Length: 206
Image (cartoon, rainbow, N blue to C red):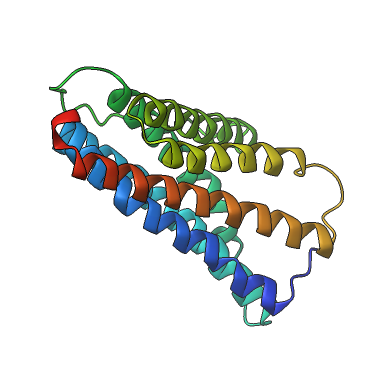
């Protein structure tokens, strides 16, 4: 069984909070670019992702403090985060396209959980990388280069997290992973805030 110091468990809430900040501004970007249907899809995905991360961080805190080991709080992250990032990917594709009117199709189907973690982890990873990649490309197209840098950082940190997923999870490795995760969510928040500012100051380009 893995062990977590209390400091690492508390720090786990930092990237979750940073993601929430970035998601808030990305929802506003969705409103500016494509209206309510797209922003609602972003919001739905963001809520799933935040809830998954928050429950995982709460589990880690309870476990590190020797209060309880509520395993479902840890395992449910995969079920929530995978469709959440898939919704963000769809929203990023819609924002990147030139259509002004969208049908309100918020159908994000959950996979039947047979082999459960593996397909969900694949969806989560590919969707999150795809969403950040498309958002970075979109930022370059709109001249928001600093915002693009934020999404590129988020993308690279996801690659780094994937590279460190295998092997023994030592305490030092967990701190490194947490640092990479925090840097990625900071990049996501940074990119979302700057993209929203760019579009808000240039409404004619939306």
